[in-house]
Length: 231
Image (cartoon, rainbow, N blue to C red; front, top):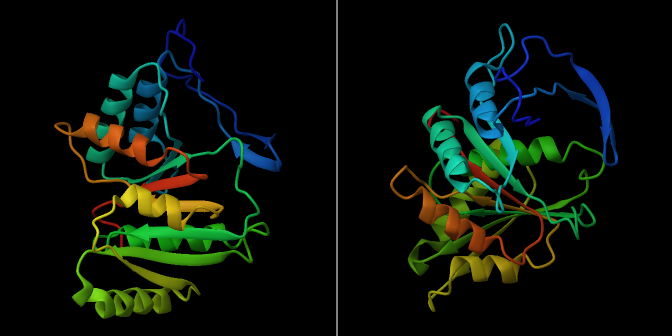
């Protein structure tokens, strides 16, 4: 909670409490008061944890309309340096999570993000609301020769995780923009999961602009970026 007149970054002792957030009850929370929201989030990510338990994932809302874009950029860069799994939720206030009936993950075909996405999907689908959701793994194939390889890799990984999902490989000979393909294919999907692009301090501004453009006119979407150590 940001309070500019707060003298400390956050209080030394903060009680853990439970509260109701929207339709969900008994949510365990610990609210910290800080004088700068971005510095507070970075500090918590550096020091937060419990004895014998080391967090490895940051989940936060996507700050599209932040009043301080430079601070937001700096936060992303520092979180990336800490090498956490990063997950950002762009929540569609009008549609929410729809009917909780479908989840799409869009995979580039490389990297650790598929493993992270499947871990998250497994957690999501144990909840009563999402238990019967239809899951799809989608990938845009720039090279028609690799189609069978894409199917084989994804199906093997799904088998390893014991997750039932439909796999769809999309050919793109016309070089249609990725964001337009996602918008079309996932038009009615309740939760879209996509990869957050690789970035560093030299390109973070352009990456954020690209992500904001991709998030226009789509349903609730989670962006993720796996740690280099995630398996």
